[in-house]
Amino acid sequence: MKVPATERLKPSRTWRRWLKRGVTLVFFVLVAVLLFSLARNVDWPEVIATLRGYSPLMLVAGVGITAASYTAFCSYDLLGKKYTGHGLSAGRVLLVAFVCYSFNLNLGAWVGGLAMRYRLYTRLGLGVGTVTRILSISLIANWLGYMILAGIVFSFRLLSLPQNWEIGATGLQFIGFGLLAVSFAYLAACRFSKRRAWHVRGHEIVLPPLRLALMQAALGAANWSLMSALIYLLLPQGLFFPSILGILLISSIAGVVTHIPAGLGVLEAVFLALLQHHVAPSQILAALIGYRALYFLLPLTAAFLVYLVLERRGLKRKKEEARQEG
Image: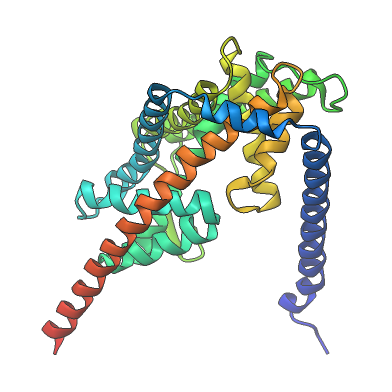
């Protein structure tokens, strides 16, 4: 009896799935051990004192940086509007993107980046295919900006690594070269590629023009830079900003690998490991606690209220459509 091809692939897929789970578990355990070993000697009263020492003007500046970063991120979806040509207003697009980004950061990509984006956009009348294309533009913008910044920071050795890190400055430099190569290859494809469309799981993905791709790169880089600027603001003065940017970029990838919502613990572990030889651990943790409060929790509170309003409008729209059909 001949076994179908799909059946023959199942053991391989199962093996890869369990390998991925195993690697994730090992990485999670290593992060937990590292965080515990680094934080057990932290002077927690000093952390609290540092938090209390932030001036109102600094906190206002932090809120301003957070607002600017969220504006850059939400503008990804405005590029999606231009890319797809859908009819939703720019204001409504920004509200949906704000809600999705806030929930994405705090609850994970599957909740905010995917499920909620499809739910809100389809309730506002967009088709699944259109939402998929908006999502593709948004994801590429975010990671294109990431790769360009990481490529520059790593390639020019703007981040000093501890001597006991196995990857070393040279290895990180080659990673930077690779990231820049991928970024420029995407931009070159947007400019010169003759084939402009691909089909993925029944959805058509159209390569954007170069101008739109450059806007993706600019907004993505701006968003990551502003996130780093907020942490830089809360840390002691005199640090090298590209180093803070590089540490944030590394910690973000570590958070993606572990699938931990908000990178909780991962961000702190990476910053403590890479920055404790320059800054006291208590000051690092105080800055990251302030960062989470300003960049994660404060926007999430506002996003929850906006989400309730969007849900109410979407439900009202569905009732009106049902009444017209009836």
